[in-house]
Length: 260
Image (cartoon, rainbow, N blue to C red; front, side, top):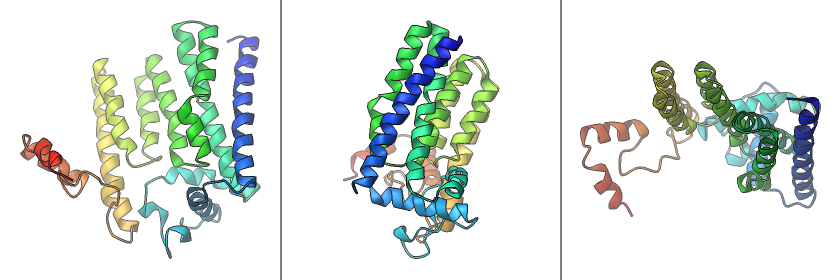
């Protein structure tokens, strides 16, 4: 990449950063921020910054946030609160995470074509409607997953399967359901006949999902269970659903179809 190309990519990323930051900060100033989620993560990160458990009173008295979703990666934002202990730091963090996605997108497309299509693709992904929707949501932990997935794709395009495995494993710290995303990555690796990396990625995905939903979240949840399982026709939990589908493979579709 030449110096001119670097400056062009930096200019695109800077413009997107300023646009999204202006939107977020103006929403906060005008009392239009989605206070519930922003408040939840503000309280959690504030606690992490104090080296305390992420107790979030917004969710309930003495509510431990790891009993809601498994996203320990948000603890990495704690140092930002040592600089400025304000919820708007989460707006800054999410903007930086989303905008950083332009780098792997640019590198992948440039390897396929040239600088022109690559810089246009980087700009397009930064203006992509889901990005706008996330910024309009003020903050969400999935913002960590966006650049990570882009780098996973870059690693696979560079024929670095074990780097892709490592980056995929980091997704397990973003949210519990990204363990399922690892199965998709494993499928791509398998299609490329990278059997061992595929097997390791799949195993990590299954183990990570199980550990988050069957061990950590139930341990911290006031209800003692993972509260976001929506496939109850298959079983009361992910583990029960897998057993059900393996032992009664002809039944799941019928069970699901009768669920109101």
